[in-house]
Image (spheres, helix red, strand yellow):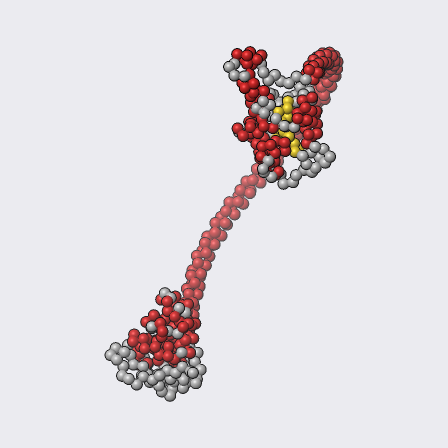
Length: 466
């Protein structure tokens, strides 16, 4: 059922604005007005939306169209800006809503609203305001009022455009006058500059004449100097010939002296070589004899001093209890003593140590933790450190080894034990090498090659102390 706007034949209450009755020209009865909505000038449309936005909060919620109930809760400055499309659509399609808005707008319009209801427009009234009220009230001839307002708005726009063009023309004329004044000033400056340049040109010409005279005098002096130079060159050539002859004689005597000195140096070198060979042979004989004796006796570094045995005999508790720490191959104190030796090389059996100390971790975490700890140990002691892991191929993604730590992986077909023994055999005779492994076979093998075997616990306890 189409929504119609009921007529109101009752007298308005005091203070209530009059609302026009239904007429044949579309006033108040849009169900009889079959003409389409007129095209409103933009200022008129904005004014209608603004008047409606101000009146929206005054209507009860049940009288508001559903699309505008949310708009009515907006802040005043956002209501007209964000809700303009919905307000315009409801005013055009909902006559009852427009009548309710009109009553509130006319209450604030005063005499101008009464004049618009009567279908007239005061000469001094704003045409945009008149057209907005006429659109809402819709008295007889309201379309003419809207059209008149559009003509007035377009006329004002044209007037503003003409005024703007006049202002731009005046500004261009002012700029042109200013440019002419600047050009005159620049022309005066250029004339002064030309006069100054001419004066400088005269000075330069005079300076050029003076320089030309100086040049002729200089050229004359140059000719004289050239003649004197040729004379001096002849004298110098004679002196150089005499000097070259003397230099040849000196070089001949120097060559003879160098030959005599070379023969003397060769003789001294041969004599020194004989002495060095004798000394090397003596030291090599002593070193080989000491190494051979050590291997023959299979001696390890002394772990107990003679005084320790005497102390065991007089101790109140068993000797094993007092000397257990000194005899323990896993004692980190023994590792510290060995690492204090000069140029010591520490070789660690990687997985033998990690699986004994932190085997619950992954292999990658075990390697990382051991390498990091060995880096700190190398920094503290200055020892050369090598850690050996089993692995057919080198692991990828390893972090860079700390300074002083060498990380090796056994090749395919070779175990870490074999690689450790090969490292020990590669060391020169007499260099202290410490091998950390709890594998008895590894310990026995490196001991035969002169290395010091220690248990994995000694290294683990030493790292835990760092």
